[in-house]
Image 1 (cartoon, helix red, strand yellow):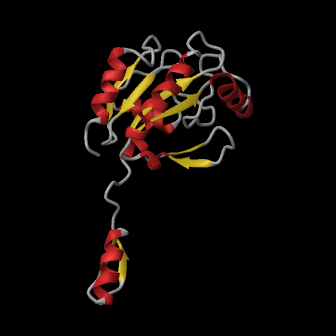
Image 2: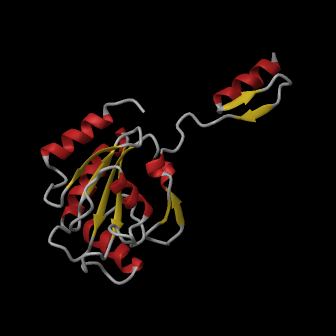
Image 3: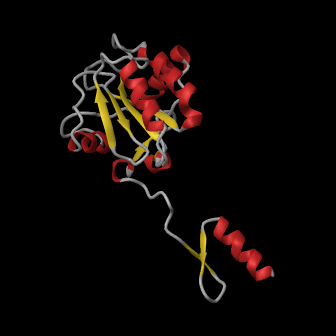
Length: 191
């Protein structure tokens, strides 16, 4: 009876049971998709963060900048995140100075985002998003056919399966019908 209870608990926790009654780790049900299989420093403290933690979620990747005409989109991105995060959406911000419109250091960028727009969605350390110096996520997005950012606030929607759904230019506002519709459709799919 106790052995059966132990086996049930171990299985519920994601552990397999071998014939001798010992637990053995199983492969996770939702393995990290290649597109998210990167570790990138967090903006606030530059501690490495695995993007695999977002596997199974709908992910909106955005290259950002503090001194851009599109910078007010932070407000709309935060609103999207707040509205849909409990349904499985995560917005990921990637500050970049590729277009000479970003602050000099990560602390200043983090303070600006939080104090000016109340950004709560995950942000990552400043990096390049185009060309040979692009961070690995943006290189992989381009390899999957996404439009390389031509300016700040390009958006890339990744489905729960970890595959690129669509890319959007800076001109696509966070509350645009096409983007919101694609997000809602992606959220409606099972992980």
